Image 1 (cartoon, rainbow, N blue to C red):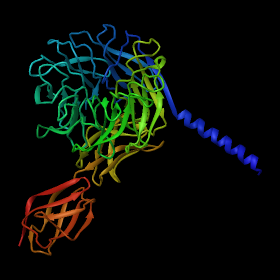
Image 2 (cartoon, rainbow, N blue to C red):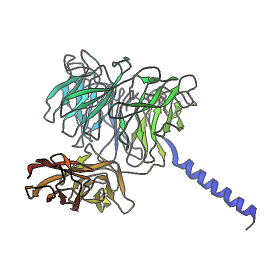
Image 3 (cartoon, rainbow, N blue to C red):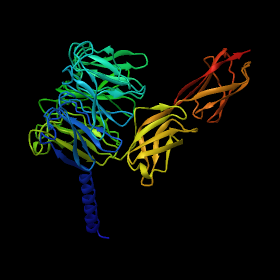
Image 4 (cartoon, rainbow, N blue to C red):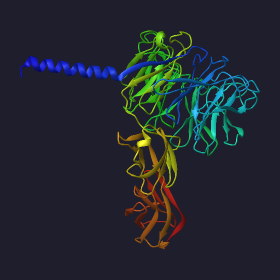
Length: 536
């Protein structure tokens, strides 16, 4: 083979690879609003993936009554307007939607309802809407801008935008509304259900520097804790965006302004509130965008994806990706008026690997905005809903695709069982032998795994003997014990133990052991015996 032939083939291969890369990065203007089918998706306008695999959302204005509407979009782009607000049932749904365990969608309207201060509503996938609560602008708050979210305890939790009081509220499945705690100031960010079961949120103002706060709320303890105050010389402030939890367990988000270049920031934060600024946008040279109102999503490649509301090549926003170390930022798309501009809302990462989002302005009708998708070649995945831990026989709902052909489910390296309700939704059950790890749905066309780990909580059912001296061998029985990393007697660690099976551990009573409970620690948590072991 001559050098020229090799060079020619290398050139051809390079062209093929370039074409594949270019094809993988595809922006698609999927629907252009025309006002009667929706208009002007302002912040936050959260999109949500339904149990049928379709995308659901709301626009702040437009619809047949010009008071906002709810729509459905198939992943391929078929648009249906499924509900139009009328004032009595609320008006101007600024926040978008969240999904509940029942497969229905929940949201709020900024105004309307019997108190003219907004409502909490439920809407079915077919478009039947019902009002769950009417705000009064009293101690219950008013003018909510975000949808409530369902926590593992089954209750809906949300926050109000402004009014007499800014509060965090709870709505039970039976429809009982209560104010849980007050928050430092108004917020435009929906709450995040963390993998630890706590709720996380941000406020626009308040805190040490009056630049906004990040807070943690425990539904069990009913206690709110401020974990970070935004502001200062190097940090951004006024975070509009909801927090997102990465696969590393850390929280990620954006500040709309501030930072060293005054164009807003991308930040990383621990659940304890320690913040690191990953990137500073610039208002003087906004080539990568600026003023990010929207939050972030994390792709299967580990990168964070987001949108900036202004800046870029056309001055009307960018779609970017950045690594979790903040060392590399890449503009993937420069928004343009013809195909949608000024992207305020946080994008949705669908389990098919594509990103979907809304723009406030632009599109074929110029003024009303658009729905877009972006394909960056990200791998499809499965996604667990709300629950991130459980015991044997507990269930968790999983979103994805191809479930009608699924052949099995695994929890970590262990067993699970499932029932597929639709091609995009299944209920998985933790079986004996399950281990802490990702949930994997086994499919002929390729397995789908969840980004987040599901923790299998261990349990101790009995032990024998019930008493003994140092050196005694004690057989401990229970469930989910195969990943045991420590055994304690009255809080004192055993220096010798053997994992016999997922249901049995044999441990030697250590020197210094105290009369008390026996504990076993695994990757999924800690099990404590109900009975006391007596050291003789």
